[in-house]
Image (cartoon, rainbow, N blue to C red; front, side, top):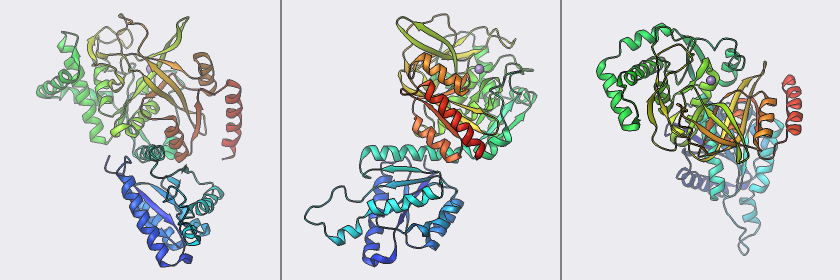
Length: 487
Ligand code: MN
């Protein structure tokens, strides 16, 4: 978490004289210090900017500083905004305008014209906001007193979204095999994706993975088995099968780490030389923060890694997910999400069990996998699709429940949820927008953060909420299509 920081740039001008500028600088430093104590990343006060040259210079430094994940501005006083144009025109980092004020309340006795000239964020932030609007900058505006916990929470959430952007620009995905044959939604333009999102998506031979697996030493497998024993409950006596998953996990991780990859995909149609589809192996890799996508779905794999990185402590409760089946019951309507094997244990309600069961798909030996129920709580599901000419990010608010039945013969991890606004309308909206069967399900990344992330990267965002109607969504998609053709 400590490797990123955010820069606090405060706008002013020379008109007020040195005393006011010293006060502004001292207060900005104090605010940055106090906010850093409660925000997920440090906020570093940089400058009280008074000239075009100062702003251009601090933006140049921000662009070239790898630690700087975003710039937060505020105008304690008035700051004529033409002086911001040259700097803003060059800004390449995420940008947030914190419309706040040093003092919380108007001091009845103390207020006079000196006070008014010093404390005029209400005035300065409007001038400041105009120029960003005029320049069509991608930005976040957060308004409220800087010591208000809800304001600090939103600022912290935005920081995590901005870190998701920094992370996205460094994502490398290791593909083993191509996409599942004939599947459409897992395809996509890898060149366009790299231009917009920064991802490097490339392929490595399954044969190299098999060679790497063969070269894994027994003591490495022993150490991995000890790790499994600590984290999970063994509900199988077939230790050889579990050891094979350990070998797969170690080999996949070695290959990813050697290339700096943070995510991988594979497909059951290309397991040449492998005895089991990686199940437990993929699940335990996801638990460490790696992204994964089944059936060659490199988009959901990268998105899983990104949402994990945006989450709590840089590896949150976010999981590769697949909508599997519905419960249209008189007792309630639910979606059941799962996958053939690969659901991340970060979303588990209880300690996962290692089980071995046959797998009809893929024509391989019965694989070991983690079986568990997902935890209860508010969450989102997110799907990135390629519309041809642009990427669309679809996000739906959901509420996960403890599965309403035990399903004792279902041999995979499962998460059950209620959709917004309801199962049928949400489903009609998701399908109308083109959302995939694969998604990332997250308990600690919010829809607002995903909207911010999409805005920062300049891709389309569609949000299905408790208030969404099919008619309004259809209208939005129609207008979006027109707008994106003009971009
Ligand atoms: Mn799938």
